[in-house]
Length: 159
Image (tube, rainbow, N blue to C red; front, top):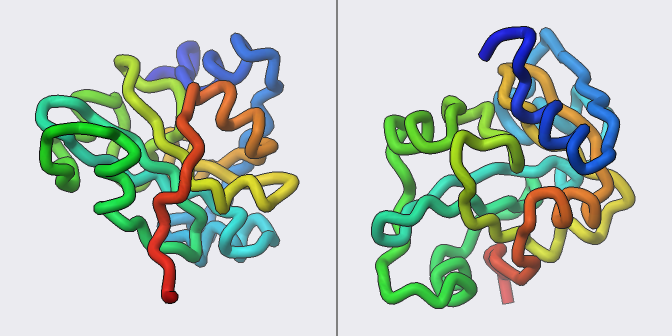
């Protein structure tokens, strides 16, 4: 990515959302680190998890303190294909971003996005920006709109 071209900023700007990136040299490699850096609740961090359903790349956006329930994701996708984690090579070649920096928007090619309903419990969430240690705040409803995401329950519950 060159400084002249920032696909995440471009996607935000196209949606009329100002890009308010924040860089945290102390790190945002884990949801816990990102929450500490941003000064927010753990569940206000957006984890970007990339899966494959057959040949289709799927992006699951889950609250930082939650674990994804792959069976719920598969059900939400209504796919006949088994859902599996994407490899690092699949992620980078198809999104344009390395694992750990995958943003919810601005990908090399369109992909299906599924957003865990839990993220809507926050006024503001923080998501990866495609650049290591750089995240951005966004209202969850705006995130869902700009990512064209399906909002549903995809996190594990402890019932």
